[in-house]
Amino acid sequence: MSKSLTVLLVAASAQAFGSVALAEGNLFDQFPFAVACEYKGTQHAFYLSKVTADGTATYMASDNFAGTITLSGAAKAVGTEQGGSCLGKTLEELRTSGQARDIRAN
Image 1 (cartoon, helix red, strand yellow):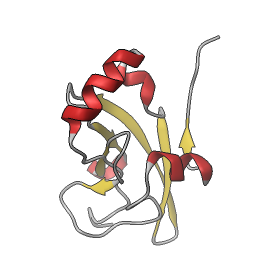
Image 2 (cartoon, one colour):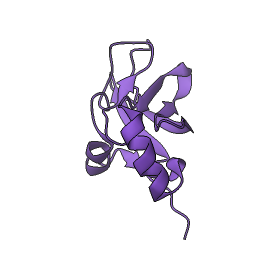
Image 3 (tube, rainbow, N blue to C red):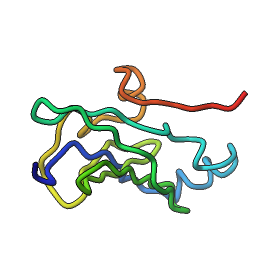
């Protein structure tokens, strides 16, 4: 498989986002724990790896596939132009499609 896999990641102007997200709580809690994406007939789970101070979340999958996303931006692949079923979707679209997986403590 090539790195042109469905990588999900955010790219948005984080200055405006960062102040809003920080006011709402922990940045890490603003993003789903995992995102399920299909690429060339194979399902991949991308797990939240990090969230930078500017509000960009990085997700990683096996085979060193990665992507980024912000709360208000679309998923982007890292290191490639190609992608799968997550590419170009917002967090809202990933949640609506059932691809975003949240874990919340009670």
